[in-house]
Length: 444
Image 1 (cartoon, one colour):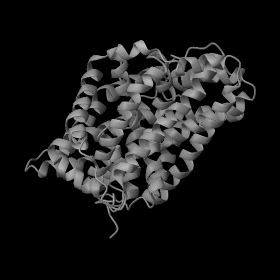
Image 2 (image 1 turned 90 degrees about the vertical axis):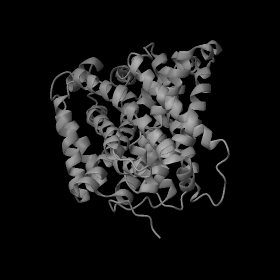
Image 3 (image 1 turned 90 degrees about the horizontal axis):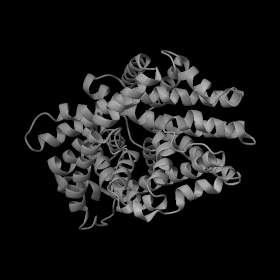
Image 4 (image 1 turned 45 degrees about the vertical axis):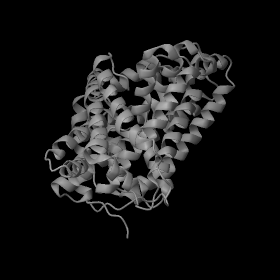
């Protein structure tokens, strides 16, 4: 019998489509600018040891748990949390589920602005304006005033809404099958080209030479944990909704591990494409988000065939941004369908309109930055810990284990799954919340 969600949106038709959609949701701006910088800042190759450990753990029990909860309930965070609370005879699940859902909407509001800048930069690379304009000037023109990039902002929301209106298999799955392989291919081409730049070796040393003393520092482990946690998007919302569209015949654990692996490959590929190029021209690898819009355009201006590679770069980032934004808006749209009893098209249009309307109020870069700090430092971590507790303590490991065993052809999960999920993962999710609150700027 074909699995149907409570909203009637259907399912992913292939395992590849589901995995690529999940990877598309996970791969975002943080993979491209934050991971390479943090790797070099916290010990180079030594940083990869805690990072990969956390990725393995969060992929195995975090992603698996969220996918399983979604598939079990056939709905998003509000309905899923409500279901979990009812198994304990309690109310309030819908209210708790609205917190991570608001986190998804909040990120989508700011993310649409940033992806609009990426779209504008892509067009600038295509026309040559980006290459022939001082990067600070170009960035200021599109972000330095209220309503300074409205057409691009609108275009991003319209494109994302159009994808979602086409449905799960016809829109989300198909577009990820195109965009994610293209993302990897374009970044691979950039990484190969960068390898031949004079001075690129310094960037490889920054990324790969291990500084083992950093493993003795607590902040290395905390930052590696935060990077892994948020890179995989285990935020109690978006991955639950994608799980609700997953067939009962699919092996969730295997798909989760493949998603974590591909997300890590994307982060590493971004590092090999970005950091050596930055070093080749003596620029700052710690430029933060502006690395995308100021530092790298300066690299492309100095690089042979820079206009072509600038286009490759921004188109690949655009694809990563659109696929992530689609996941955020899908979670919101599904809630509008199930809670407001709207048809899919109306729910998508309402979600897109709300995202755009709120975003227009904060399109000025300093306002957008403060908004994103509020959402990512406070709201999203709270949603993440709520999701972890709801899955493994409220609903409980036995129920999730039973869901995970479907599609595994009798292969056991292993004795370590339950303690890792219930105690280690939930504890670390709580640590993420605390660290986000007390460390300036958060850890994700």
